[in-house]
Length: 154
Image (cartoon, rainbow, N blue to C red; front, side, top):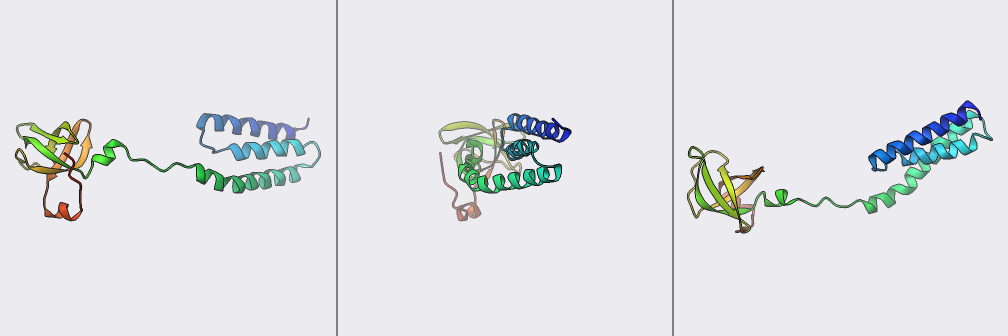
């Protein structure tokens, strides 16, 4: 076994280890290209081995890319992302200076803080702007929010 054969074997093993560590199909094509180059290293000089590695890796990448695009799952928003922009009902006055405020969103009661420090009274509608931990950051609902067609989910 000459040094080029060993180099291809090492590249193959490293690519497989990287792939196993990431599980993201990052280096699988390099692993297969290195395996093919390893096999031809017994018969061809290094220049041809390198060409075989580059061509095999490129062909594998090009041929499997459309398949991988089909397997890619769309990003599904989390509950956190789905609640932003929703309208909630104030069930306890929101007052930043007194550290009070609760709203009901989708049947769940949340601690709430006004986005800009304004006082918001009980039974008013508010729009969820952000979520920080277990606290909703809200703002009073106004006509510009209605134009955005936000859903009221109480």
